[in-house]
Length: 162
Image (cartoon, rainbow, N blue to C red):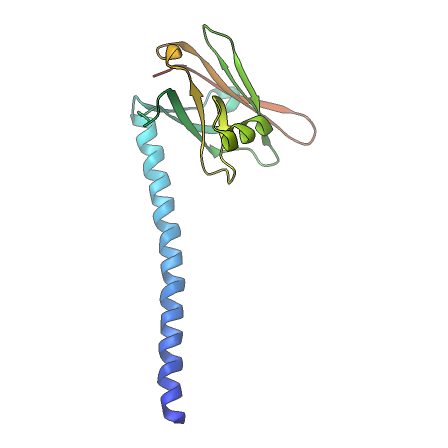
């Protein structure tokens, strides 16, 4: 009976090691995918990332690929934010009325599904939903980040809503 316990313990140990090694591979794959997405973002017309001298500490990736929704929309993700800074405000300025949302308002829109800027409850998804009438509208999308000393950094990009 004692001899049977050692092979069982060995199998459990090997299974545990496989699970742990798989977790490390998943992280590697997601890192590679993020790198690949950043490279794709830089070369695609539908996805754009930009860094002006003022906002070289911030990297935002915008994705305007077609979404399976009735209205227009784009998604965004933050690839680089300076340490100590947090997202405070999002803004779209185009031909129509400007759309402004604080981080809290975007979280509320993420829960309710309303138009404008949204951030999902877990922060995994973020974007900007707009009426079809705005498609083709040229304007500027910007994100304001603030630190504890109320110092602001702004990332902005001129785009055409698709």
